[in-house]
Structure formats: C-alpha cells, structure tokens
Amino acid sequence: MIVEKIVTNIRDLDANELEKRHKEKVYLESAHLMKRIQRVTTDHDRELGIRLKDPKDLEAGDVLFMDDKNMIIVDVLSDDLLVIQPRSMHEMGTIAHQLGNRHLPAQFETDDMLVQYDYLVEELLQEMEIPFQREERKVEKAFRHIGHSHDE
Image 1 (spheres, rainbow, N blue to C red):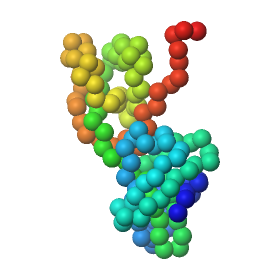
Image 2: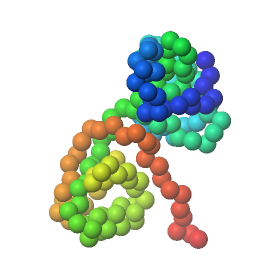
Image 3: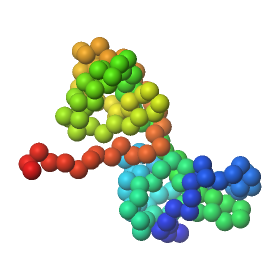
Image 4: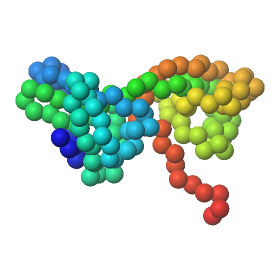
C-alpha cells in the first residue's frame, strides 16, 4: 500500500468514529515526521510506503488509512528531551537567545520549552541556573530547523 495523503487526524474524529475501527499504528521517530517519502511497518507487521504529495510534516495522530473497519495511525516514539522551565521573561529571553545562537529548534507545551537533549545545553542551563529536567517524552511534531544563513 502506498499512502499519498493524510486522511485526517484522530483529534478531528468523534469518539464513535474512532471506537468502531480496529487501529494499527506506525511508530516513527520525531525526526522521521519530516520525511515525505519513507517505508514503514505497522505494529501488525504491514508494510506501507509513504509518498506524501503535499509538503506537510506528519504529526502524531495522523490517519494514513481508514475504511469502515480499520485505520492506520501515526504515533511518535519518545525523545530524549530537556524540558526547560524559565521562571521569568528574562530567563526565557536569555535561554531562547542562547538556543537561537546554536540554531537549536524548540517546541513549547504550556509553560515548558522543549529541546532535544544536548549535553552542552544541559551544562549551559546548569551554569545559568535555569530550571530544567531531562525527560523521555513524546512530541506531536518534528523538531524543525528554520533555514537561515549568516552569509547573507
């Protein structure tokens, strides 16, 4: 089976629609959410080819296939993350500036700033005395680098 488009996301389905179907999952690393072309295997050992026509990243909960009885859903494996919890706008601005200088992508969940684990960032946070924890956590979207060059 070749998947060329995302059917929907489970967050957009009502509970009845979700419950009446058998669910298979495709587990992806967060970095693979950006790949438009890839070969994957479901948790029921079904091989799929993904060749997305739209330039859109996959997200946790995306439905790759759905009929009256079955659905195949994207799930994301946990990442090794630094969960940063600045206590003030000053701390947030300072660490955001530092991470930006390193071109590290970040995500935000409520008051948490999430970055993929890096021992240098961990040392920086300790040095700056900014509260953080190292956690295994699932993210819904890929950590995407924003294209930029200092040559311009």
